[in-house]
Image (cartoon, rainbow, N blue to C red):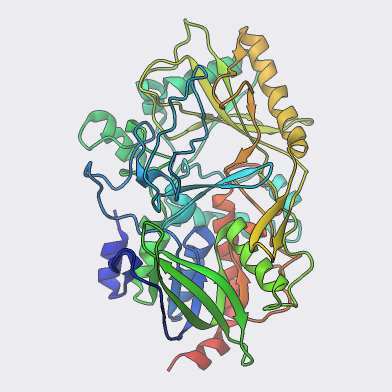
Amino acid sequence: MATLSAAAAAGATTVTAAHAAVRGQAPRDGSRSFVPAIVVGTGYGAAVSALRLAEAGVSTLMLEMGQLWNQAGPDGKVFCKMTNPDRRSTWFRTRTEAPLGSFLWLDVVNRDIESYAGVLDKVRFREMSVYVGRGVGGGSLVNGGMAVTPLRSYFEEVLPRVDAGQMYDRYFPRANAMLKVNSIPADFFESTDYYQFARVSRTAAGRAGIGTSFVPNVYDFGHMQREAAGTVPKSALDSEVIYGNNGGKNSLDKTYLAAALGTGKVTIQTLSRVTSIRRESDGSYVLSVERSDPFGAVLERTEIGCRSLFLGAGSLGTTELLLRARETGALPDLSARLGTGWGTNGNIMTARANHLWDPTGSRQSSIPTLAIDDRANPTHPVYAEIAPMPAGLETWVSLYLAITKNPERGSFTYDKATDRLGLDWTRDQNTPAVDAARSLFDRINRANTTIYRYDLFGDTRNFADDFCYHPLGGCVLGEATDLYGRVSGYRNLYVTDGSLVPGSVGVNPFVTITALAERNIERVIAEDLPDEVRRTTP
């Protein structure tokens, strides 16, 4: 399996990290450097853009605020597991913040930890929190790997001005191939103890007359079968997912980013936070960058210039950078639509209590592979992924991430006085999503004479609607940008991530983000870059 370090060696390029500097060193000013293209972030859209730019011959610098996760911790592993988290788990907190807050109302899920540049961040707004990945590979490091292509009808509804024929004939297949999407072998799924939890939920849904479908994934299921056979160390089968995975998961550092570094045209600079963007009189862009060590000490503040700038810092990061630039006057001509069209992708979590004669299993794979598929429901379409709860003991709990159709949208704001991003979103706006999830699981509970669990989310709720995994929107395609991610009002400035998608895509969004980035960068390279390459390449 390709790795970043191997790709870097083959391509004679580098991944640089600020933690090589002395911890606590006083900040110093650095001289400005210049590169032809900068990509901010290393998530899905960013990784696609960097690879395709490099293949076109453009030297590209990627700036990532998290770490390169390639150094083993005290346990000999790069990432820690869900059931025994340490400082590697969480981005600059002194206590972990897992989606489940309790079990039997006992605070046994989260742990006190040392503040550190961990891999999972929970960004808090007034009435909504958002989980994001921190590190080279972005969200691909911490998600469950569910690689679902949306229903074509839903895609056409969400992005009606994008040619769906091209997307489904060319760009979705290209994305799936590069991401190494595969499906669990049916015989393994049906026979292994590690998916008893999913089979129990399938049976419960069937009693209500509701079907299920298999969920494609980027986890290598051949590797998972070797884990089950004991021929390789357990990873997915050892509670590794939201804090990273040490085994068969094909996160971006093993796919797009490894390929990008292998070209010899890409450099990734880690622990580097872009704080502001401005444009020079010659049309180039200058980024102010703050480099830190993994404990948060600022080591260096520098400026880096570029001719072409690609923002792939995610719905939150990209929108914040552009809003700050507009509101401070650095890029005053940015669209008034910037910051709008944000949504949670209809994310709702819930859980059911099974009967004693329906155990979910003490051994559970951390990788979801089955969903209750009620997307054809004309009133409340729901795609509910059957999530694991790998506690290491029998819980009789069926846990679900329901992706619903919620038409509500929020807006980001920027407060210049406090230099903070805000989100105008209220809990009431989750009502359509909660109603849809409740409609589905009420039917399943009635058919099985079961009830909801009320003890898992830190209080007595049976639906968790105050956090999301799939933030979308803020720089919506065709509104804050043109139909290919070119930022309105500014040449050579592009958005390439989930902020382009207006709030919902009906399934896990990363395949859509990847495919959309493939489509957009192909057009940008064909139409915009020939002139830029002539002006920046010796």
